[in-house]
Amino acid sequence: MRHNRWALLASVLVAALTGARESRADGNGDKKKACVQASTEGQSQRDASKLRLARESFLACAKDECPAIVRKACAEWLTDVDHRLPTLVLRATSARGDDLPGARFSIDGAAQSATAGAAIAVDPGAHVVRAEADDGESVEDHVVVMEGQKARLVTLQMPAPAAAVTEPATPPPSESPASGGGPSPTAATWIFGGIGVAGLATFAGFAVSARSSFDNLQRTCSPYCAASDVDSIRRQALIADVSLGVGVVALGIAAYTFLAHRETPAPAATSTLEVRPRGDGAVVELGGAF
Image 1: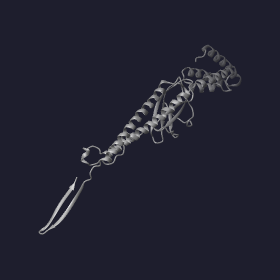
Image 2 (image 1 turned 30 degrees about the vertical axis):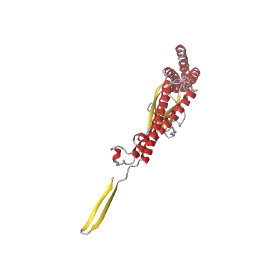
Image 3 (image 1 turned 45 degrees about the vertical axis):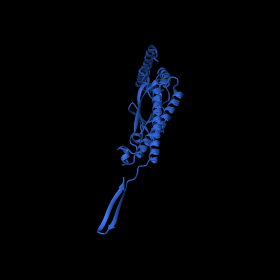
Image 4 (image 1 turned 135 degrees about the vertical axis):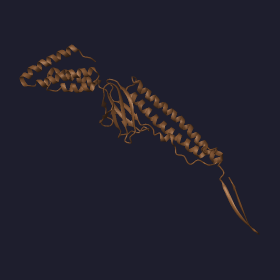
């Protein structure tokens, strides 16, 4: 929203003349000049969508020491900027969706010291939001903030540990010839069982996160939510569905290999050593089943 430039120029000229007369009387000309300069800078910053800087400028020219006409205009502009200035509420969660109260946040590379859960004022436009957990894990997201959008919740979810899916613990492989050199049924049971559990855990984490984000959009911006926010929820829901399918199939395979192994156990290797005396000595016999 742009204001009438001619009205602004007239206000500045009147304030300057007033400041010049008062400066000769009380020596406060420098303060009056600073008030006029702050009001001019604030309007330029506001028109450039630098609302945080504009707010600081309008606070400076709305002080009691400024000329009345400047002070009144700055107070009105300050109210307008406060209404237009958007705010974000940052939240960090684990891969399962649990809150991480000790996480550290930054916006566009600048660390944020606000109390956890408190709204943070930002200029409208694109921003890079980053969260870092106590264990060193970090995640970032790109958001576009609309002018006048208040208390928009941005949830940053830490990635699931890769080892939980790619490196399941397995017992030593069986040496039975029936295995053909591949993993034994027991090893297969452990492998697919681990993948199944990891798939279900991933499903639970992304499903909870998607639901939480959906509820937040319903409360804060529906039906005018940003497309990027809606796409993010869709991606989380898709990952949850795929993880559920993988988990169910893997657990089914694990159950099958476990039952098949119990029904047809591999024969154990045995051996015997027998010594029989004879009249001229002894006979030694070695036998076994493999």
